[in-house]
Amino acid sequence: MMSRLLPFPMLSLLLWLSWLLLNGFSWGHGLLGLVLAVVLPLGTRPFWPNVPRLRDFPKLVRFVLVVHWDIITANVVVARLILGSPRKLRPAFVELPLELTDDFAITLLASTISLTPGTVSADVSEDRRTLLIHALDMDDEAELVAQIKQRYERPLKEIFEC
Amino acid sequence: MDQVVEFLVSAAILVGGVFALVGSIGLARLPDFYLRLHGPTKASTLGVGGTILASLLFFSWQERALQLQEVLIALFLFITAPVSAHMLAKAAMHRDLKRREDTRGRPWKQ
Image (tube, rainbow over all chains, first blue to last red; front, side, top):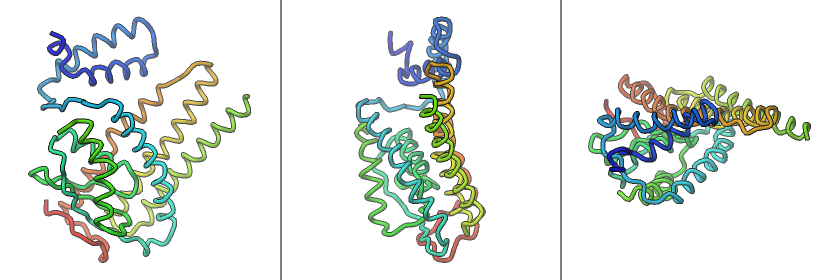
């Protein structure tokens, strides 16, 4: 019953919170937001292919904090690179072999890579096994791949267990 | 107290402004398309982040209540920015744009 009414509880929660943030916290908007949070996921259900279950919420919070911290520190590094001599940059295309198998988790990983300065995910292979990344300044390919795997891919794998 | 908040707001605006500027400088002076792609994705994280933080602090102080609307801007930006960067990169690979000669690795055929 519960799972039929709320197929994606996290999406519903996110919608409800967005509605409240957008319109201010009040009883009226709380109720209206609740209705929308139930109706919208039901209406858009066909557009959400198997979203993986969230297994580990504390790890997700940790992951979000790590990503924010990385964005701040890496921004400073990249700012220095941009203001320095462009000749010194060592740009590279890197292929990252994926361990994640789920589309949603791969999307999260690719977005994280794009948001953290210094790397942009450019493409994902047809078979979803490789991610193409462009790096602004790469020292060592193996090191970059290992760092992304350890810092972002492993936590995502544990969060969604896929 | 007013002055402390004023100082924090100014600092946040400055940090945001500086990083947005650096992003734009990157857009102007980096040598090829793929490198320039890094500029805007930077500006949209810390640049906008700093500005949002300043706005959040200022209005929360002025209204004497926590104002969190700005958080939505950050949320939507974090969802959309990587998608646009991905589409730009795909388009660039499709058109086989020139990249700096010393770029290691190669883009995929589209």
